[in-house]
Amino acid sequence: MIIAVSPIGTIRSAFDNAESGGRQPSIDGQKGEIVLNDEFSDGLTGLEEFSHIIALYYFHRQAEVRLKARPCFDPNIEHGIFASRFPTRPNHIGISIWSLSKIQQNILYCDDIDVLDGTPLLDIKPYVKQFDHREDPRCGWYDSVDWGIIWNEIKVCDMEEIN
Amino acid sequence: MIIAVSPIGTIRSAFDNAESGGRQPSIDGQKGEIVLNDEFSDGLTGLEEFSHIIALYYFHRQAEVRLKARPCFDPNIEHGIFASRFPTRPNHIGISIWSLSKIQQNILYCDDIDVLDGTPLLDIKPYVKQFDHREDPRCGWYDSVDWGIIWNEIKVCDMEEIN
Image (cartoon, rainbow over all chains, first blue to last red; front, side, top):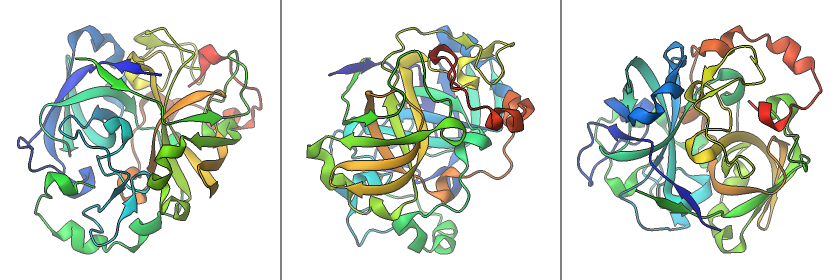
């Protein structure tokens, strides 16, 4: 079964080089824009009242599928691709939660975009705390990461290491 | 630009009828399974240490695209599709956060699946609190929903009304 999807817009970001990218919005996300194709503008009604959106997008610079990966947050150990957010996943679909600053016509201004410039957008969903927050989740190997050190690093990971 | 994606597994749920479906995991999700295609099993390594997963799936019973919708949580007002989780969205991709009970070989047992039986799976990501939690988000019209009443309702929405 093949499902055909089409980009509904394009993401403009500070990461304009295939060799670099943000790791996560909360770590090194940068201001950027989602340019939604005009024909979908009616779908934005009411979205300006949300502080955060969930963007679904296509990892367009990542052709490879690899079921085990060494994410940059723990590069010494191979993790299953479904236990990481690494881009070499089947179907190459990524998700990120971005802080929505304002909407002007079909352009959404966000504060913490973490994807490459030119990334094709597949969907926008509102972040809803009743649906998207879980209290005290167990997060596997991520629970052993020293986030204090990571948040103090400014450097941008190599594209190969994102997530 | 057309992007071809392929299901990597199938979701088995209690909602076996196209006229009914769950609304959200936290509201009327039910026990069910994700049956991952065998060839992707290696990608599960380490996922058993996570309490929650984010599933991406295809709304396979929803052919229509409608940019404004009346979600069942607020059926009196039309909301933009990108300000709701309604399934009539371009590309028909849904996401849900499910509680992971156990993994046996290529089968993931979850406690609160909210999609139709037979839903094609597109991706599994680990739920990571450092990436996926936002403190005190503004959630637009969802902030006016009386969740107490909704959580006390047992009824299952009509498929047309999901989210």
